[in-house]
Amino acid sequence: MQNTLNLTQELINRQSVTPEDGGCQQLIAERLEKLGFKATHLRFEDVDNLWITHGTKGPLFAFAGHTDVVPTGPLEDWNTDPFKAEIIDGMLYGRGAADMKGGIAAMIVAAENFVQEHPDHDGIIAFLITSDEEGPSINGTVKVIEYLNENNIKIDWCVVGEPSSDKQLGDVIRIGRRGSLNGILTINGIQGHVAFPELAENPIHKASEFLAEISSIEWDQGNDSFPATSFQISNINAGTGAENVIPGSVKLLFNFRFSTELSEDDLKTKVTTLLDKHKLNYDLQWKLSGNPFLTSSGNLVAATCEAIKTICGIETECSTGGGTSDGRFIAPTGAEVIELGVSNDTIHKINECVNVDDLEKLSKIYKNILDRLLID
Image (cartoon, rainbow, N blue to C red; front, side, top):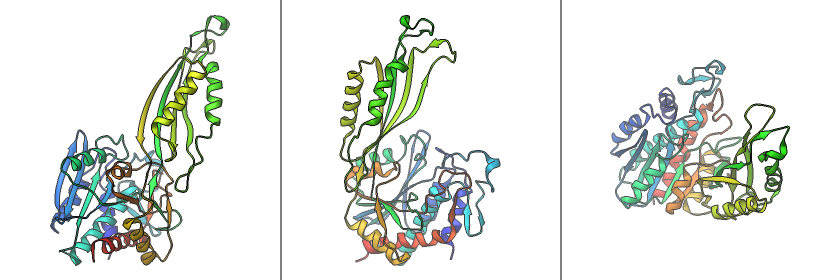
């Protein structure tokens, strides 16, 4: 049977560049409602979200994912139509094949098979699907969590279907993620003629010692679950475009990927203290993408590792590497959260693809997790 492959193809063929859903959630709802799932469609501004459940009494197990995808990039660079799923040499090509329509399809088929076998199962099976994961993530999962909190609905276990695997399916699961804190820094000077520097104040020169120091700081040494906090400058912009004008300001964008050894406030305080130490005239705006979260142990981690061993015959690595995910909105509710999906080696790339065999195998892993958690 190739139910997961067929559904993945259907989803890929629906164009859903963020924040568009392209009808994917309606397709999902219609399939699951045939098995008695009850759907709630939640639209916030231009974002579609789906909360759909089967069962009436906890514990609550949720699959989480997103139907939106990143833009394709130059179409002429693709070997196939990115919105027309195509199989070549055992690989399924298309935008979203790996990130993460393949994962969503595997979840859906796993839940269908589980409910057909166990129509009166213990617990509640839910899906939290958004079309705002690849975008600003302000009207997606975070808003659905607010809705759940308002209705006293608590997720106990959550599997996020992000592509976590490295060399082979199931070799890595994410049990947490680092925090992400962004800064927009403007250092002000006085614009002037390069021939009369005494009448101007070059903000690039004034910023140089600050940049050298902040770039060399060891923020922490990490811990058993997280690597050390990292600081990176992603953009620097200054000048009028003329070679004879000292700029009046320089603008920098920077990011911290931080461990549980530091808090958001710790980082903000250290940066502003350093700016003041160098006596800079500055404006600084902060944006927190998410705090670090960790599910280091518990029933979900144990069930997932055992399911992978049963289906794939391998031991899995528990990691907190990579960027952020919507798990950052779910974990603070107290839920156990892990991320498990297909290989991440082609995500966001031209010619994104997924191994066809991995799709059905991933669905079997997901169902095995349900078996372990919801069947006595």
